[in-house]
Length: 406
Image (cartoon, rainbow, N blue to C red; front, side):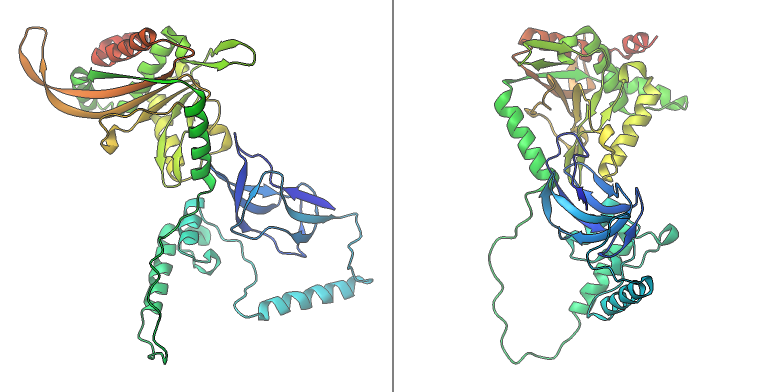
């Protein structure tokens, strides 16, 4: 017998929710054939058959959340004798055909068909108690889209609200108990990690402002020349430059070994607000990349995060994290460090404000607030202020930042 277990398919994974099975008991499977789709706290992934054989048992129901190491499917290997196999091949074929026909005739049951749909589309269906196998896909090759699911929901709603015969018995009053949502998957993993970080790391938060007036003017001039990068790309490039000058913030503390490990590369975590909850894709080797490349990769990672399409390798290895919450309207926060990193820079809303210039005149400028959280075991306040001062300097004088790229 071959046991297919839920294994660790992502950094820090402890459990997973069973989204869908691609097989039924009795099916023959080949090596690497997808068996089950699992939703972890970070990604949706398929587990494949490690060995050819026949599906003997499916041990965990769809929708259940189980721990890593739990056996999900049991296979009978090709060279193993099944327990209930018929003596002759024709008898086996007849038996299996009868079983299949019987399953079709059962009330409300249909033969399995593998539905093509994105993990987020499946999530919409699950949250609305829709069996996605019943939804007719209108996308390429019959793929089920978000719109298909919403159309199915509207149809089901219309069916439910259609006039019905009056009931002989009065209906009971609606329950006034609170609505509940599962505390599992990514939400639970976020809670565990944030709790561990907050109670392990002595956090200090340093606040600062940056005058982005010249940077805004610079971007406008570049836009007229047909060159446009998001502000986030400038923020990342400035952070990388500052981290190379203050490597203590591009580090981790290993208390067991009694050492602070300074990373030679800058893998920048991009804290992203996604439908499933906060997730941090990682832009690797940012110190080697141009503004254009950083801008492209940042946007691609953010899009994949919001669509729940990130791969495990795109979520691991971060050395420093940026949280750009300004577009959401934030003006300040005390962020929790993404352990085991040493620092996190939260970027807040940019507002037009009166600014006193060096000539003691007043002009309207673009002012952005930021907060820098750091591990006080590893660095001190003076170093944190120097780090953010350097970051602010590069943004306030964009020509200096451009010089750093040469």
